[in-house]
Length: 293
Image 1 (spheres, rainbow, N blue to C red):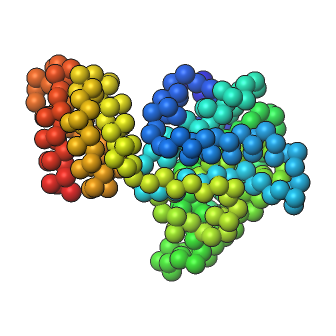
Image 2: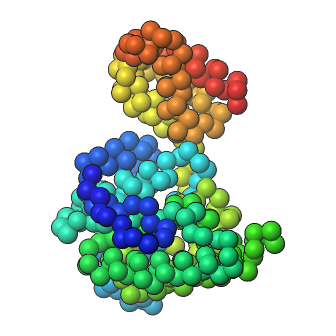
Image 3: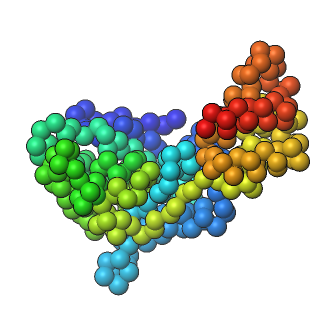
């Protein structure tokens, strides 16, 4: 994987990767979502990266911000990776830089320090990368930890610093949006209500990524089983019934894939010969998993 070295002393950035990358293809193709939803996300990202600098910020206000919202386990972060990789394949040269920001990495022990760290990220770090002229996608994972809703800030969490840090995020997003049209942000959140409304209002697209329905779960089961037990993956009738049970229980995509692992590990012979895994084994794992809640 072509990883770009992170300059020393840079807070918040946990990775910089050049895309496209062959190892990231699965992160797009194997996240099961409606085709129209994927197309909408990809089109928004491509328009932002290719045309934002050519249109009036007043006539067509494109902020360069896409938000993926939904409960944990629905594949938001992986989807963000795959989305950036797919955009890189379409845009071609120069290669795209994917910058991974961890909001939890910013210090918050001292009053005002979070604000200063966030301001440095948007005023110096991201512009320094943007000056290279390459398209850049910046992932703000779990953005509710960075753009905290100021209306819901608790007195126990130092609301003064929370307000200042959120203000710094909003000002930074605005600054990068207008000055660096080659940069687009993709944010994820597990708690949309925990994200400041002013941040949400800046988004060009807020896409809800919910638990998979029965058809999506069936596709996920087939895909996961295809890794180890192609025979079980071909048992459409048995898997369809299981998919319905899992959908009724609001099982998320990650849990669906983990149930296949649970079934594999239920017996030593399956661990040694995964191809022997059958739908009956998977059904037993599903029953056990649902019983445990």
